[in-house]
Image 1: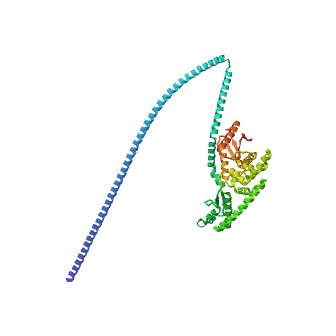
Image 2 (image 1 turned 135 degrees about the horizontal axis):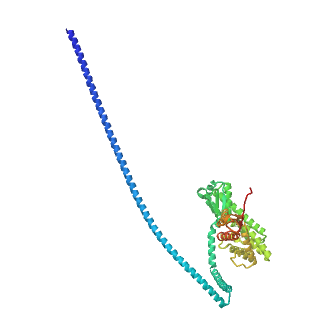
Length: 516
């Protein structure tokens, strides 16, 4: 019995355990379902919250878009209203202008009608006056017993006499006024000319250039703290200009002999390469000796070339200094020899004193050798120098009078003045710088091209002739002569040039056809 009971008890215990386990599983499952449901509810709540947030954002964006659209619509409406107002103002302005134009049109028509009436009246009065004039002319012819042509001739003769007398009075008045103001006007013109040409001319006659192998030599010429260049300037009495010009040093001084001494010394120093104060002094002394020898030799050579004998040694040495002096690119010593030969030829042909003319022509510019040291015109300085040296009065007078600064008292003085002008104005005698030469050629062509009818032009023969090609369709045969005169007048009025310039105008009509 006990085993059965034990078995039943065991079965009951197993049943109870199984039931307990089942209920536990059911409870556990229900709990899990409850927790899962809670999470689902939480997720649903979060989704709903996100949906509400997105809906709120979308609503806000829609409201913002709507607000911007409304603002843009309001702005567009405002612009449209402004445009409508402007259009209305323009329409009103146009209406007022149209009304004014109508008024002006009516006024114009009325004035035109008035002018037409006045023109008719004037035509009638002119016809009436013509008739009266004809009647008066007939009456005058009957009274004066003169034909109309004879009366015109007498009237024109009377007017011609009156005009001639008036012209003579005007000429006398102009001449008197010119004599009264000539000196002041001349001084003004001389001052103006000096102002225009002094700068370029001074640069040309007061500077010399020394070429360098390289720009490194500039620093050696200057030396430590400038001692070399100071020593060179002190020894020669010139100014040494070292600027940005590549491989070039400029020597500036009014005395051409000092410039030549400085040029020789600096060129020798640059070639030697040893540049220091002691070497500079030695080089300058040597260059000075060489230049003195050149001066004596050149003075004697000039006297020999000119055929002049008996001049004092002081004058010959001073003449030799002109070897280093140039005037407008013309060497003064060569110019003096040329003037001597020309003056002698003029005197020989005209029966003057050939020896006086020859000597005066050679020494006429001797004052230019010392005009930077003595105050006054070079002609007067030369005359004083020649008198102190014991040269004859006739020679001294002819030399000092060649620029008409003193009254010419001898034929030889006239011969020297004429020979000086001939030598200076000889084509090619006075050279120009390349820049001024090119500027003169360009100016000539520019003047010619400024005239209507000129197709092209060319300045040839170093600017002494201007060839102008004329368009035959714009200028006729008679007009070509007037055109050349106008070009010549314009050149005379606006340019400065040595000698004369020939204007050659070419007008050619060509007809071209082809045989096929």
